[in-house]
Image 1 (spheres, rainbow, N blue to C red):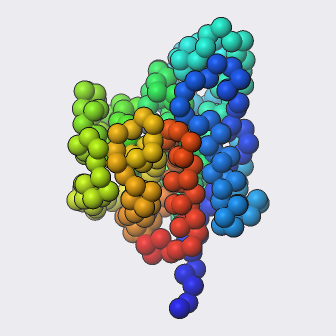
Image 2: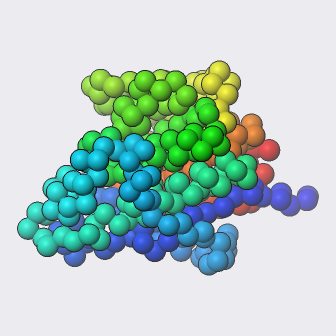
Image 3: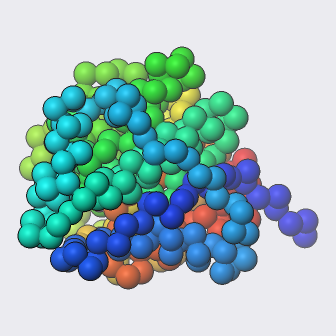
Length: 310
Ligand SMILES: [Zn+2]
């Protein structure tokens, strides 16, 4: 059998995505070292070499202001204010390094989107996907709305018009839904459990799952809803907010997806987007606990070994 040529995927990562907050009273279950673990995991399984990762500059103030308000930008530059909004220990002497991982990860999303749109590639950022961040508000450990900034930037530069955001993070993608509420050029699709139905802001398409959704239930709901959205909206660029928190080992989510089921999810979405010729950007988004990184290594290794739907 002829080996599959593999998908022409490009990765974005740099060490600045990781800032060690563990020494400073950080008690959240999000693994802050995850971007590096994914990178190291891909190298360890022989999927890529150490030189496979593009490094992007951090997102600039000017780019931030495409989505966020001036007052908000000033507020997140103040380490104490940012620490409070991220629910970090206020007694720790925080400094400007606290915002840096957000700026660098968002810069990675911007660069990945630019490359995907101009070179018609599938680009993966090993960070980003801060889907709760809003124009004037930090929420759920999301300080910078990276996907929204990248979208506005590419639209401003007339690289793309119609952008689809496919959000399969366990949580509701309320930040992007709010930012693009009155913008018909951006379609937000989000699948999450009924736990989030109290959120009043709706995406263009919300798919609700029952608690403890199995592989079968989850993949059925996905396959019955996503293809029609892609057909009808016909995007020129797609973001896949690929949160790993529907995984059964996730310590926050209550979905019962197996490791194989998660890979099947990612393969399906890739086929629906990249497989249809749509330039695609994958961002890692949420995922809690020690095993989250494995879900991404499985997915990205698969991307490198397969044509991914084409
Ligand atoms: Zn999440």
